[in-house]
Image 1 (cartoon, rainbow, N blue to C red):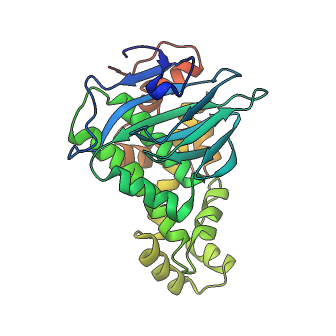
Image 2 (cartoon, one colour):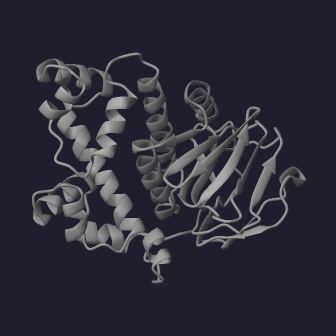
Length: 302
């Protein structure tokens, strides 16, 4: 980790510093015309200062994504102002003026990454054009997990980090395209799954909730989302488990129970099959968890 302070004076748009719990800065200048999508900076700050405010003009060459862990704030982009809060993320495009700030009474905690290169500028604008700057639900947990993975793997350069950034952008692209598809399996169904992720969701019960025959719903879901209902639900449970492992001190047994698994061993088995690591090992490697709970991080940073 190069520094735990973030001071940005490009174009004299920002004044002040922000103390970070984890902070990465690229060892060399990021080329916007690079073949790969590259990280310029990334970080975790458990709470921003009460007077936290960043304002940039359209000269800023990096796109960025911020996941709001805690608190509330305000963002302005493309002539509109929005409120944001915990378990939401917001997206900003390169070369577009923007502003974001914390609520002084409830400052934000953030996991964030800024990037350039490859087709990242086009993908980011596509996300903003179709879906706007703010996302929650499955998009939040998936993107937050990928952002923290970027910090864990920040010694890598080239294709490794590029693929993680590409996964982040494609996660958001898929979200906005499903929402704009006009098909019956859309954001309402995905939101229902997220809101009931602590239950043992079945295809038959979900199909009935939305008024479809199970066989028809199964086929429609697979065509629209690109995977089966059961695989999607399990991936959401494991993604939410990652979030709980990083942001709470709950034992594995409680997390398994909260997510509707029949027993802890089944949860551990499914987690390891999807993440190639046990839940305990995942938590021990989480800088976000170690920082929040006052332990020394076991993650590796540049």
